[in-house]
Image (cartoon, rainbow, N blue to C red; front, side, top):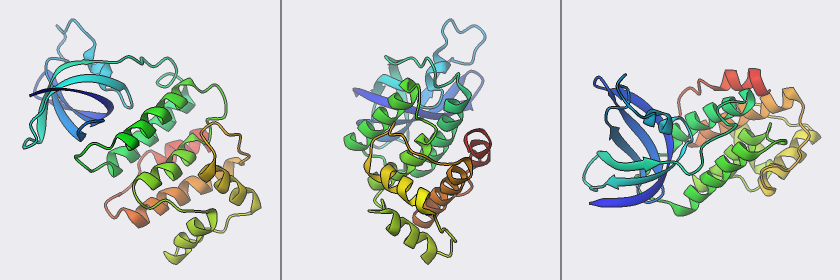
Length: 230
């Protein structure tokens, strides 16, 4: 059955000689995998593979059957071609980290319009922001944790859970103020954080996710994020 849905590209792997299997978080069906044929051929007349770069916002017509793990696309396009996110080093590094985390934590195969709207709004903010996005990844993880069911109500609760799990997190006043702002204010709010504090909070947030998601595993993009944005 043909269905329309919006999607967020997360990753893809090569499939056979010219195709890919794309992993997409969709508005209607949650996390799905799609075979996309003939996008790696030298004879391909389009650049459709670019549509499946991380965090690309997609408009899709798909063949959907709820008893299948692998689906096919009828049509795919984007109405929001990125102008800055893949090309600015800071933003592309954040996008790499965010994409890795989403690949690890988005498991459900059912649509969640509220979560999808949050992800769309977050990605569009990062794409369009001119300033005040250096802490985006920190704010994003904090806000995402509420959709995943383990968001902390305050900086004290966040600190307490880390200490209970033997993680020595002792924020100073500056970081505690920053945490509370991140929990309550929207993306783009100016937050004072030193380079070392940003690195420390990124490590603490990834540890916080490890506490709540056993299967999280190693976050390979974290060292790059520390180097570029810390």
